[in-house]
Length: 126
Image 1 (cartoon, rainbow, N blue to C red):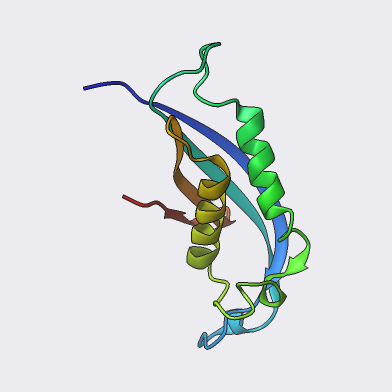
Image 2: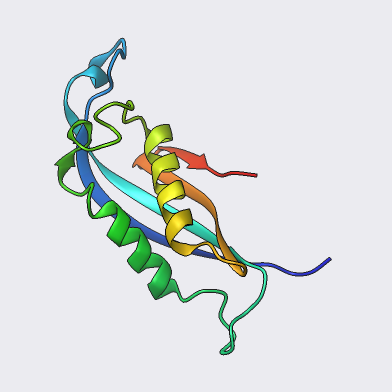
């Protein structure tokens, strides 16, 4: 069995949302300071011995979440149609980062989105 390397970065953004059809107070507009953990798997190292530079992972993540930062998520596609739950937001980030980062050597492994200090969701694909 060959080895793999898992790199992780943590970043954050602030955004508001409301949950459509939710039977509670989260159906009202409210905000979060979202924490985003991104895990990247490398099957091989580059010529200088890195799986992927942490700086590059963080830059790609911040480029993607920059469109969400200090916004009402319900106003931004796809969340103007898709309910902006933590589950849907984590999948959105995962898929966007997969398009930006994945190649024959590295791929997004998981995105964990923290809605609060005590509640998070992790999205991954097989």
